[in-house]
Amino acid sequence: MIVMNDNITTQRSLKGRSKSLSLSRLAAPQLVRRKVSGRYTVRLREIGSTYSLVSLGLRTTNKQEAVKRMIEVAQTAKAFLLDNPQATSSELNEHLKSMALSFLTDKVESFWSGIEVDHLGDTAANLKTLALRAMTIDQQTHIAKSLEVLKAAAERVHHGDTQPLLSIIASMDGRADPLAHKSDASPAFLSEKQRDRLEFDDLSVMYIDEHKVNLKPATLRDIQSAHKSLTVFAKGINWKSHTRAEVAALRDAMRDSGKYADATVNKMLAKLCALINWACQNGHIDHDYTKGLKVKGVKSTRRAFSKDELEKVVTAIHEESEGHKRLFGLIAVITGARCGELTQLTKADIIKEADHICIDINDENDKTIKTASSARLIPLTDGAHGFSLKEFQGWVQALPSDDSLVFKVSRDTASHWFNKEILSKALPNRTGDLVLHSLRHTLATSMKQADISESTAQDVLGHRSQSITFGLYGKARSVDNIAKALGQALSKSTVEIDSGSELSVNRA
Image (cartoon, rainbow, N blue to C red; front, side):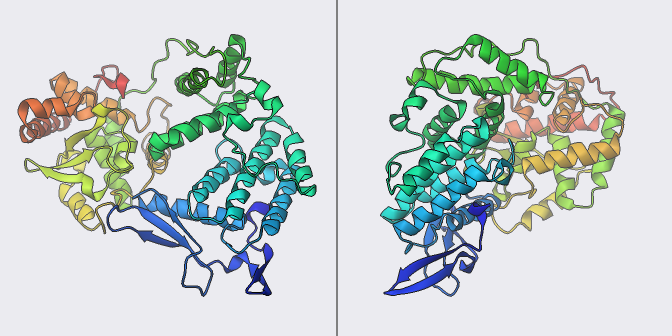
């Protein structure tokens, strides 16, 4: 694919002479952490040069996320010649024309890997990030044109429509420049055809562009992922004139695909409803027929582990050779915390309160929580299911900085490890009703059978605001009460866990 070819060579004029610049001469990107904000910046430069060609703020204090973003943005800058401020307008146009021709004539598989890996969408997002930085007029014009080319390529991918790409190539051949001041997200520049028709992709781009300034990275990724999946089933629907029957058919197609449980279908419909309602409220479309289409009577099939099942799971966790995974698994067992809550914990989130070591689940920096009530302190119970508080403290103390991730794994990696490795080893004949999230159900059931009050159990699971608890009793006393409750529930190892008895877990 032309877009990602590191061997492309472009000609430029430098100080009155012609010079050949190979993009493979770009030095390894440099990641810099700002002292005050803690956020990361990436600097790009040529090999042998001491000054930066481009400097980009990555808007995150998470080093792993920063490295990933750095690589993506650096690759996009190279692919679109934006690492070369001396590139002329004609050079940029010629390179972009080659890209457009590639998008038009190559197999779609060459630049599109399906729902989960949207190279076109990711590249467009990187270009918009580059546009925020110091660029020449030619470079900014090139970015605007490049976004139009990517959108035209998406039309071919999703709808088999090659006309937008053909029009762009024709305009380049005629030296016309109709795209220089257009935005791919602005309805003011929609073609006559597009004003009469709005595809799901068009609305998604406008919606995300407007909302992303107020969204945390995890929330933004969640919306983008849902929209990518919805694009497949929304193909062919003109949202300018959509009908109730078309939206119902979209829902039925998701259910019939066999890829999604009804609960997941309902979540995706919620994202669709939010998008179409926004489009209607802002005048992009005239009506909204997405309300009231969720699948009724959907209940979670997840259940708690029985005593015997939990013992086998804990044994498998203890046999894990990688310490950070073993600690993650044990803390999930003894706290009932959600997977995402644990994987985003940093060294600074392990605190001492009322002589108890606690995990502080919060939404500071770039972290996200499900609801405001999810913010809470959970004291760790030493010895519960073989958990060693001393080992955990030693692990945390060895972390290099306050923003270091405690478990060094993403939510997806941790979930995959537990569901595919631990459960497969511990319970090879299990059914789909047992997953990592079942540990929350198990702890809830244990607390109920240990006669822990529902309000205290809700404090542990994040089902009510601990600000209320702390306000009534004071933080130290409240944490002490929670610690005692957990110790009581976790010590009753002889209690048979009733998988059908749950405490507020339907809100998990």
